[in-house]
Image (cartoon, rainbow, N blue to C red; front, side, top):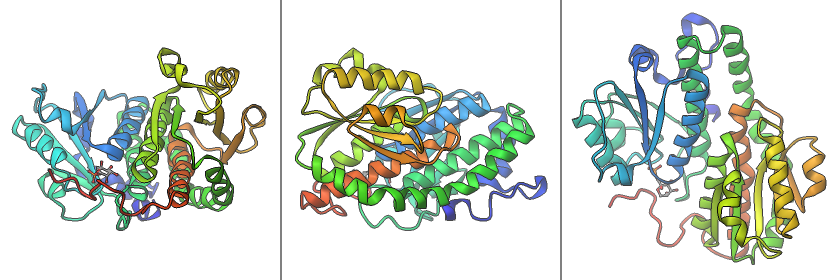
Length: 347
Ligand code: F1P
């Protein structure tokens, strides 16, 4: 993330070179719609991007799985901007979806980690995440870098659309610059605790992950990381959807990871935890530092620093990545090379 942001988050008006959209800001500001296409982990980043761009810049955003988009008959015009997100830049479904959007006249913006990859070459413009090579197959640091970049894009658009004040923009940028240090703090402060939690739950057959708002996509991502590298069945859901089905699964054998920062949806998530408790589910909660309410209600709580809601996903995903990692290690599977998964899915 530090590399993603280095040299770009300069607050002085004239030298802002944020997020590679400087030369295309008119296109972005006049866009009737932004469509984000991607797969897997990158799709989860796209969902956070939707929340950020709609919330801050008030531009309508749709997020589509490239693997669906490419086979249906989507409505795309030259007024649309399509953002393709891909760690590898080689994912076949994303390439096909992007080509389709290009044929229909959309402006294509890429967010890739691998420089000069196929997707990067197909785009009209873009930003690299500069997260460094992902050694393992499962995308982790590229994901947090994607989130940082999307926050930068949303903030930049918001400022120029006038949907946030200059003062608010400046204070959010200053805060965003502190996020890499907060990430380091989360790793340092939670790793040994997460190792112990992994020991308690490495034998579980199923996991449920719940989150709301900005942290709903993080619930999806936490579940995907566990599936990908530990081979444990896991489902991610918006917490409010729990009552529409998944609640039937909750009993004393079901670990439920709840992302519960003390932000906008806090009271709602507290009542979701009560519902899980009354069914004897075991809650592992991600909470804001100093939160005692949720801490007293749950089996395990993992603290993350108090930051603006927009940036909570960058921090809340770290304990979930570590949990999946330590569970996989305990189950003696190859975390870097999970079975059946390829680093870039080229078919
Ligand atoms: C998409 C993706 C990854 C996942 C795995 C398979 O890749 O689904 O999110 O971790 O590696 O591919 P990409 O388009 O972001 O490279």
